[in-house]
Length: 132
Length: 132
DNA sequence: TTCCCTGCAAAGCATTTGCACTTTT
DNA sequence: AAAAGTGCAAATGCTTTGCAGGGAA
Image (cartoon, rainbow over all chains, first blue to last red; front, side, top):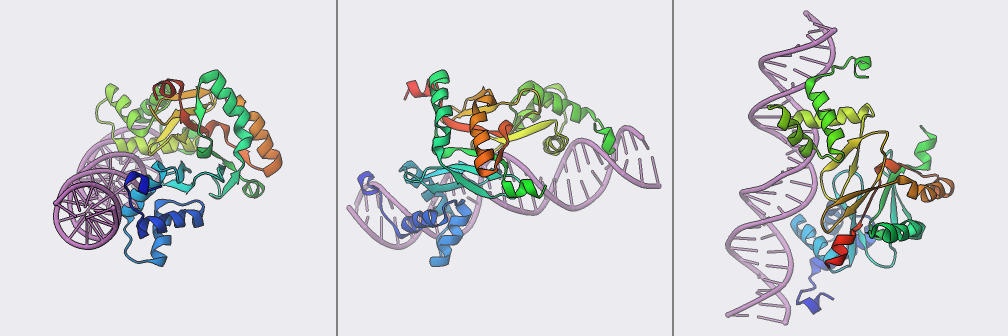
């Protein structure tokens, strides 16, 4: 996959991709920490560059959960919508199929193609609702 | 509204709130520019502080559209979902009613209350799709 | 040799904080 | 006088860029 484009499979890239898979939801910083637990000396710059590359290659996707840092997750198979609790910060996942009717409608009526693997819905989760 | 909390209605606050209403979708920077067209010398720091305050008071809300800057919009009346084109960056608005079935389902099945006025869907708009 | 990658340091932005000064009550 | 608000400059935090060295094709 990398080879086809004349790119190289380096230890760093491998580790970073693995980290994204392990973490499920990973910010650049999270990835950096995870990688450093295994090998010393991997630079945060490389993490940023690699995540960008992996996204170009379609191996990971990213979403913006709340404020600041983008969150990366493995692409493909397990696409999901994120439910982000703005009270406790927890992230649940959801089958994107639930959104299909909406997406179809947007495509037909507004010619807008929703990137379903990239959706985050903000709100309050059950636990936090109780304790309010 | 401000008075009740011992707070003051200053020209800056007034101008900033007006700017948010005029702009519809406003980043701190956009607000700053808009305000400066009218009066010189309003500091960006004040814009940040005021937007935060206005949000606490429930007069504005903010969403995260794509990368970086939060986008503020007037609270209440015209709640809407944002359709963000990741190709050209355009922002369309949509009636949140389209999402109601999904929200109801999430509430019933996962006890998650979606904040409908805070939703952004990313994807590609009609124009960009054509020119791809 | 050429091209790709990485690390390091520096630069860039957006946002926040500390502090002194001004304004309102 | 006390409390609140503002501006300015500095600090912070995250991300990007430029560049030199190292390694694979």
